[in-house]
Image 1 (cartoon, rainbow, N blue to C red):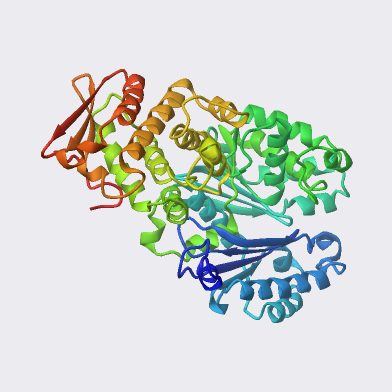
Image 2: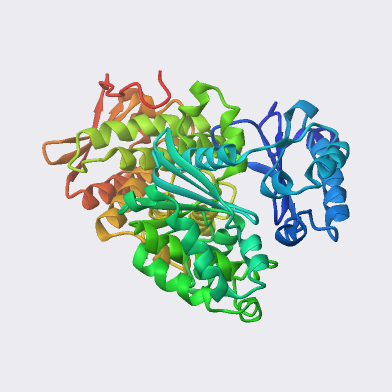
Length: 522
């Protein structure tokens, strides 16, 4: 392959215009460059600087004089990085939150920051910050319902969410950095401050049994720490969930730890040792006050809410998981169109089978079809495991952790029948037995399809796989009869056995199509 050919190859979507968000917070400043404006945004590059601008805000009423110079230098660096990534000036979206909003020297810092960034910086108010955080949750989950809490360094925003509807929002001066400063690091002094602030929010008494969506670097660090301490099989924080009783126990444990003690623990995020105990204490108080059903951790927040706002109504209506899977398939599969055909082919099977699907189960099957060929370049012995690792650790939205494990198992079983290695049994353990079996059926069905088509488009629409009178019937047109053979029949028997059906291959001049118009039309 010559240099000119190599120079034209990219692991990115052609024509994608990157977009950047710069988040100037009380504890950190972050740059995230997304590959493109989409329902499933993928970070192309990201970096954070732990500046602690709000560290002495309660005492000095000004931004931290020790870190203002480094913060401005970071902003200049972030602008240059955005330029290098090809972000147009109009596609850079910087904003500042509580520290700059409250500080007496906030306007002066803002002027210097805008000079460093080269673009105007919005200072978002309390209400908008809460709204953007909840919008981020709306972007990251399917039909979320409950309370969104966004813990920053200077403040905590709370807002009620019911699908697309937001209500009862409030901003409280309970940021993790702010609490640490106001109490001089004494957690016992923080308890009455937290309880008094929460007592002032009447509507928190009326949310019992709802989900609590936890956003913010400190709470993400808390989740990462717990996942590491329990050898949890997934590393993605987004969608990690624990019931309220377990969350109370965990937050009480970490709230009682010292920064030095936390620093020694595996999984502790660097630079978060001081704020995690206060974040744990605050989350513990919130759980006691609200009595939610579950605590759900979200990697989507204000930054992702900013991106979601920029989308059209049609783009917002897209399924974030399937949108992401389409992108991955486009970049990694031999034939992305084959994945779309596989969706409709399996629609016909499951519409007539006893495997009654809920809507979420259906969309996960569709996602598995799209991702079924992403590891074709790997060595055959490792394709199943590589697929499972890629899927289980990818930055997907619109999926919880059991769903992520299910999706990984589906594609793993496209290559392997038995669970092997260290990861696969752990992923399976996240699912009840019926879903483990369903993943096997889907995976083996996808394997049958690839045996029939070599992973190439155009063949599946000429065939059908249907449940008919206790039989699993694969119908082939006469012109594809030569594809019939022991390999194909062995794959068919494998699927039929799991579905308690008898396998049968039927060859006829015309195969009646049963496609339903599918997810992608035509």
